[in-house]
Image (cartoon, helix red, strand yellow):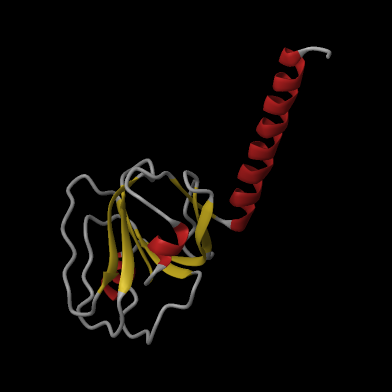
Amino acid sequence: MQHPTKEKLAVFNRTRQSFLGLGVTVADTHFGRLRGILGRRELQPGEGLWVVPSQGIHTIGMRFPIDVLYLDEHFHVIHLIQGLGPFRVGPVRMDCHSVLELPARTIYLSQSALGDELLIGSPAEMEIHWKALRAREVEVQMEDSNSRGPR
């Protein structure tokens, strides 16, 4: 999915069928990546920052812990950190394409894990995805009922 700079994005863990955030901001400029979430008192549930491109982050100057998910170019989780505290430096991952910074306990509550596939997009893109997913589920159900035949 594309990532418009101004619009808040939704992040959905396709593997676990759970949302990680509905109000995630994109940091895809030099200044946006440099500033990150510095100066914030906290991240509210559902908020977050998607740092693109990025191979690692730090929490120097921050006042609260965050959960961090490192993603490859296909939005698969390749590394994660629960509760990265203030004034820490996360590892640099050369195979990383982008990083999600989310409120602490988001990883736990969403049950996200290594290898999970995420969807990141606008609410309109999420709606298109959901409609396609529902249509596929209906197709599968019809195929299953047809394969069983009459009773």
